[in-house]
Image: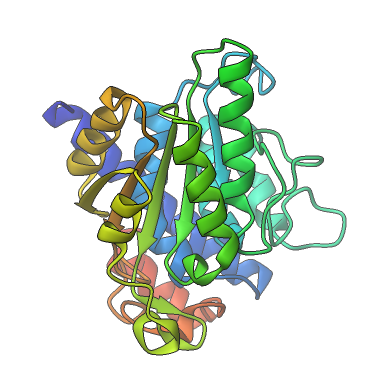
Length: 275
């Protein structure tokens, strides 16, 4: 269980990372606001509490692996990597620029700390399954974490990967589903309803948990629980709010792929206490 001090530190870290996300998106004049903000609490707990990793040695053989399957939320991962020390925070200002190592979707060939290239939705879970199976075959103890979007699980490849993960009993695999209820075209349940997701993954023989995706202590407990699950991969369904942290971004599909304007950035920074 996370201590009160750790919870406070993680909440403060997530708040600061929201600031970094909004600044880089505003500078780039491009990118995905809503899904980056909805995922940052989960990523903060992973990078700054749960995962074993070494920014001074990104290729450390025994590191835990993280796959951002919803690759359009790359600004959230980049903010975490810069905060952890994989590269300079100044690099965040180059998001989506020609020649920058911080492109619109993660690139393992350019950015320290990125495990696989993602962005074509539905494929990241298959890659995470491959990484987890490889670790099993090599006798390694590291864990593999993967973040999915809720609109993303409309892709059939997700369910093929889910079936394979259960078949091979990949208990070293933990997937978090960022369930904010919105995708680029509107409400997920109206575009293509994927619910009820808990029973679906239970039917695929996964260990399933549901949490408030903005409660860092609950996220931490769920990740601890996942480590104790044996013979099954774990799915953590994280109930989140698209655009979380800034009231005028929250619950709005219109901010799926729209960066904050200068005025919106100033208002958002004030709301986050960083004016």
